[in-house]
Image (cartoon, rainbow, N blue to C red; front, side):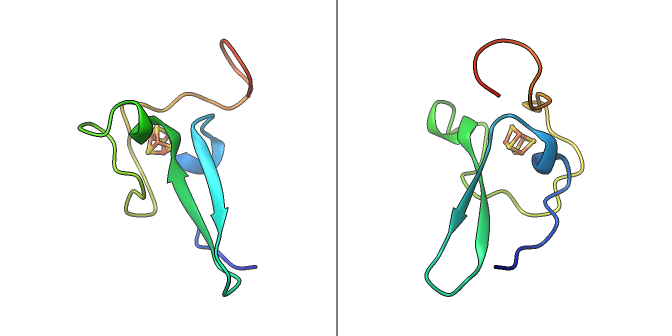
Length: 63
Ligand code: SF4
């Protein structure tokens, strides 16, 4: 499977990787589900700055 580097999203706890049937993987922003007015479902990559960024494995809940 191939996918472009997603920048900040690659280390963000809100990133979800979504494979398609052609072998590509898309970087989905989980925050778009609860705040769609602030976050694109599939942000333009690479994401270099994001006010919603939270490091994976840090803070509350699951990583
Ligand atoms: S919150 Fe920002 S850095 Fe995190 S997955 Fe969404 S767009 Fe990427």
